[in-house]
Image (tube, rainbow, N blue to C red; front, side, top):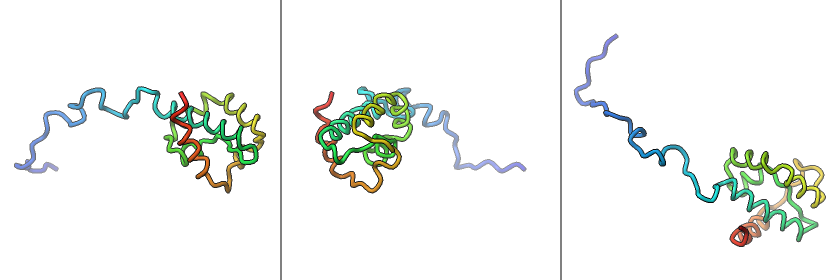
Length: 123
């Protein structure tokens, strides 16, 4: 079946995406390493929290990074894979045995406030 030519339609010579500069295609890149660098700083702050709050420790999980601190799932997974031995050490030193269940039912607001206060001091 052949449709009649629409007199009001003029095809674009190039798509809008093709005319954008190469640097603006896809996701924005940050010079500081982006989400993975931010995740590393967050985990450093959580480690400090665990050392100073031995009765209220937190396990480093993808859910914590993603849901509480806004780290993108793919970046959180990549960071956790790269840093697994370091995170295991953090959990061991804090006495965390069951990572999956450790954070359940806890109020994350105090931890979030501590992390946000600590982030600027971390390099």
